[in-house]
Image 1 (cartoon, rainbow, N blue to C red):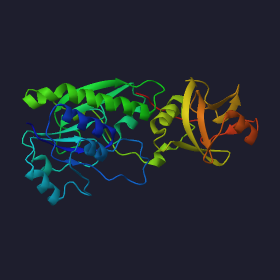
Image 2: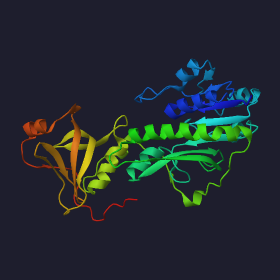
Image 3: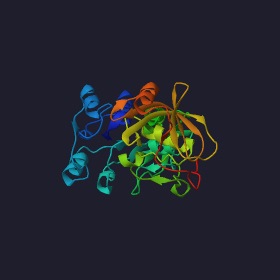
Image 4: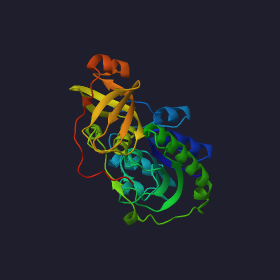
Length: 317
């Protein structure tokens, strides 16, 4: 029986762990993370899945520490798999796997290497992404590609909705290629990172709305950071606000000072870079506001939004 050590977290980790067991792979140990109390826990806990499957698990502070490497080496795994584990595995760990160490990444490599690939793809207006199973190398997401599964990104999809698709793509990707991987016949395709892109981690403050940009650019930002992520934030009449859901009602138009108006029962933002957005979910001072509530609280006059006409239109891929 093939033996695999699994480093896993989040929904992708939970589903891929179940795929391995469904194919009869022996998993003598699962390595996961303790949950961060500062994060919203909207995802499946890999520790719970491991317990459900009667698999032993640990959550070390440093998976690359000598004691963890020694523990993993003593189990003599054929493969090591990393499924959305949040730390890079160092060379001593990778060397333990007799038949190779592989990672499941949430993009179509070589594009969107690095952190938060789904959020970055939505932010940049992509219309497709997916999951890639690849061998691990010294550089992040740079090893040979074994299999990929694409999914569409629809114009109003949020990052959470896309992540749900990517989770299923990861499951399909692994399930489809695993028999060949176990048999030693799976392909190894060159991962030409020079033709791709790398992105770093995103921070909550990256969600600030610049209303001087075009409607499409702002819409992509809102989708990329919508709950359960921190949300796009701004100010409305000096009050802290979060824009949680938008829809483009005009993608182009005269560049103007950005304003928020109540029109025909809707909240509409006129964007400085051109175009208009309908705001379908708006939170002000921590409370959801309907268009009627905005009009009652601030009056019928257009409300200025932070920013001004942008001198250089934002690019979309």
